[in-house]
Image 1: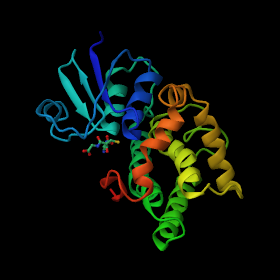
Image 2 (image 1 turned 135 degrees about the vertical axis):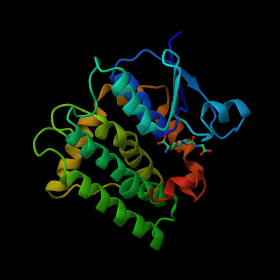
Image 3 (image 1 turned 90 degrees about the vertical axis):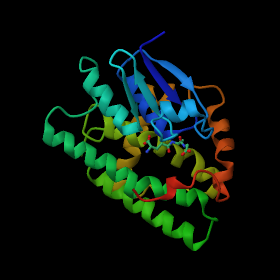
Image 4 (image 1 turned 180 degrees about the horizontal axis):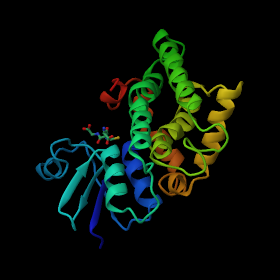
Length: 237
Ligand SMILES: N[C@@H](CCC(=O)N[C@@H](CS)C(=O)NCC(=O)O)C(=O)O
């Protein structure tokens, strides 16, 4: 039993961000699998009315933290002796937070829009264009030499995008016959980043190292691929 309770759903990329943070920082925790769509009074209370995973409860501090990014921030502040995931100076930290917000407004909604749109439709074409634009802007701002966003060490910006980048790799070819471009320096840099991320243990341990993960994920997203699934993920934050 640990003092950190982590409420998660195995398929959820937002929960995976928080889970990667726990694994990367080597923080002992109890993983609690929950169906966030089942809005029991207990779950609504635990999730502070959001009804969404992830949530962590730190029983030592008597603090509940919902939301993937708030969890990553909380872990970095409460466990400063473990590997930091945010830059130490305030200015650089604000920059990191900007690039995490950027994912929510310029990348993630378009991944879901493309997944949900009918292949070849105008909606699919618009989503593809915007997804590629978002990824290109993000990638142009990466460190020029070393693999991760800020250089040699993976941090919150990398962790926040990784579960979504993984879904781009797994779901879009399967359901839409779409793969990201690979020609030109920006796309080469993106693929250098993704190669480093896909070898990153916390990503593997929260996904592809789990039994039948890829098959289960593909099956889970079937309703999305025909326009169903969670609606709000297509909204621009
Ligand atoms: N902004 C939230 C989004 C979390 C989220 O959308 N979680 C989904 C599962 S992937 C969920 O719990 N959905 C249940 C619902 O919205 O009712 C975060 O970053 O943590």
